[in-house]
Length: 153
Image 1 (cartoon, rainbow, N blue to C red):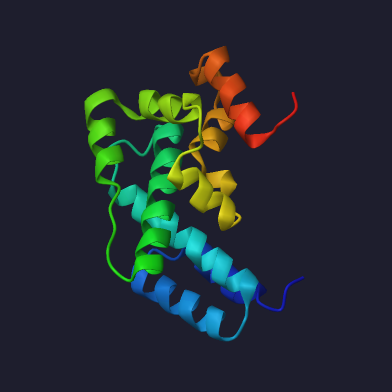
Image 2: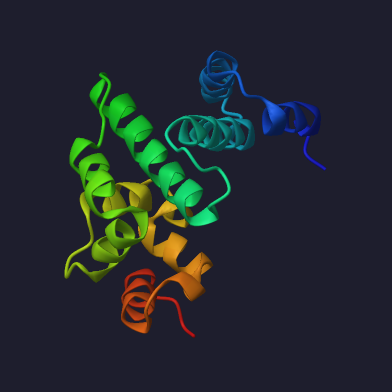
């Protein structure tokens, strides 16, 4: 059992972005990696729910977590607020599933994929979303996602 078990339980149900950002900052300063990761992932979830209309579609929610994670990491890296405007516009034009599929089918990984990989967060990539919901995507898209993530079937 982790020495941070109590705080981790609080983080799991916290919806306050400011508190979560404070936990991230404090955990980083104290090198409490487990707490920092939990608070960061919870913040990503909280922010993702603000961007979608239908919380009942798990694919949509999962992908918005990806977008939220990328925007947060890029903002932190660059010291200013970053929004994935082109991705958001594409979602408005063609929808989440088509956007995700197109990302997986690109010959080269997206900048977002590389950023998530570098931060050990590939579970938030579009390809990971595809593999969690195989019934929603074509075999071609599933194969591309597996290949990019190097997942054996």
